[in-house]
Length: 394
Image 1 (cartoon, rainbow, N blue to C red):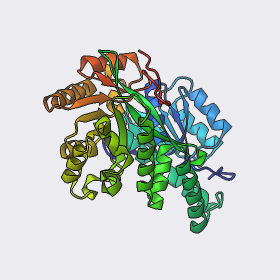
Image 2: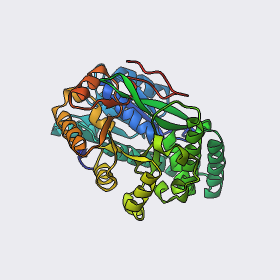
Image 3: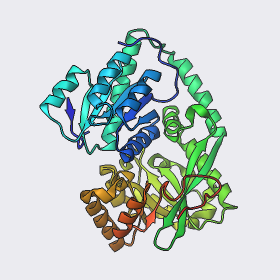
């Protein structure tokens, strides 16, 4: 089965895990490996990576995986050969192949090797997540069917989640990643990023998923905003970006004059991230007006990642726009991405909006973005998130 990127029997017990599953990602393009693994990790998966088929095969032999994502053309061992090896190691693991050159022969060999499906490059990262979600659900269902994985009672599972969630909230802390102005070699601001000391919910995506299941998204938002406000009492930073998911826009605490973050409103940019549709938020315009009246400015996250980002752009009319890392990745090699970024940067400039390019990891990406008019950048090239304020590498 071929999925276009523009659309959307085992043995032994599955090891207990609080992640959504273990995924092996294998591709000889390092930038793609990083993009795939980071995206899946943000969704709550434990990810192991390999940059050639032999390394991937060694990882398969060392431990069990819930899904394998592999490029067809890799040195040492092709993706098709790896899928055959995966069947020998663990006949039930779903394999997803990636190819830039789909053919009938490839499709036939994929079926013969038990491949679940394959995606056409360039792969939309949201589609990749959907496909991996589907694969791991099939994997879990197969293990349950064959009695190879214990199924906890709903009551016990919820009690465990509530206990771990409480521990996570009690240990929440915040790290910061610089957003730089490349041309002037200055720091424009910092993005506040939530972390927790609870190891079973250490991944922010896993914590938010738990919060959604327990109906406690507001609790997470309030604690993070309070932590940032406390840090800002001491931090000498001109601007702090604070993530606010759309569900939090219905929280009266966000709009309250007595909220801890409000006293720093003129130094805070609220970065709207979509975990729910803006259609689920009542009277968006009046809420944005109220926040701006308290000094806050608004940023839209992940512009270019899909329809949702463009919808937020049109409805929120933000002061700052953050370009999704999928546009940034390997931009120096991809003319279509460069044209999209150039037009977005021009449009935002004409509307008086600032543009931040996220996920910058190489000097080549940095230089290409600068040439396209994107001087504000964020990514591992400059600094990893840290506390209190990590130094920038120029």
